[in-house]
Length: 425
View (cartoon, helix red, strand yellow):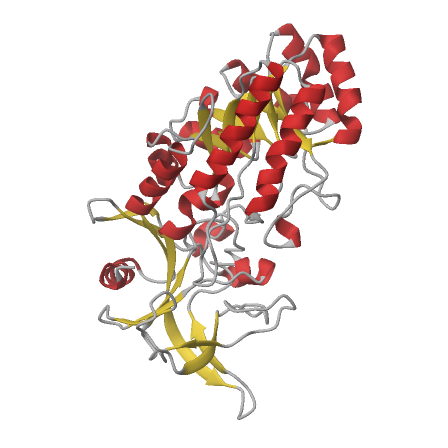
């Protein structure tokens, strides 16, 4: 964490500010692209993690393709220069009328459509049959794993994908239309237990063997655990790849079918490249039996993950001159000040340190002065793309990239108040 360049970015572009390190993104892409595999590997970036056009271009330049979660995401990816045949659409949407026509046009240009429900299949069935389009299917496996219940996408509390109880009906309809599923996909959740991710490999291969004789590729999803805090451990991409490779080779020996492997990480690509730079604007204390509070000029409207998931992020305290005064990730810094960093929203949950019950949890750090910078790490994914940016009419923060050459580049301008209101009548 280069505190000097972050302070320089804050001085030039203001705070709060999303800050990304290009070299970290490139390094993470290379790690994923070198994942062990048996008969070929496709890495797709789950662009819902962060959809900024400049970041999509960097990631695409490293050989990654795109996993889009909505038609608008697919359109944004294409507008960023990514060809349709490098995009798969895996969505809860069930387009009809003009939206269906737009989807069909994208499919004609090469977009891969990942069927997630019977209704989606019925809507696209005639078109796919008439145009000899092969489809993918996301299967609901009945098991899942995530860092929280809201990030578990595979068990009975989640409705993502075609449930196994609907598979026979889907395949019967597909057969009547002459449709082929050449890719099978299962995603069980974000940031879950790597052991469960491994078990999903066996489960998905069994599903393919039982139901999908035409499948040429298997997508094991993403959700690789990323360690933000010192007591956390990131997923071992090498070991997960070796396990998948072994199981796919065993599948080949058993069936004579060579399956290409796909994965679709979002967090792993970009989480640790991102920082949110805020400034300390006030300090308060709630009495002798209460807490110290540091009031920042950016809170839940720039990072809602603590409120949504009780997620923890590393904190850094940086002086106005750019000196690093404290880092959660460096044992050489011994904090003595116990405080809760909060934002400026009129919302009691606007805290960057919350437990699973929504209660603020004080953290140890160095005591910042008003005007110092407070940096929140591990915010490259699911922060800019997911936060309630206009709550209390706060404007959307700008995004700045620190390029691999060490230059600062604005990749999204600061929103204006007029832009918030421009569609109001």
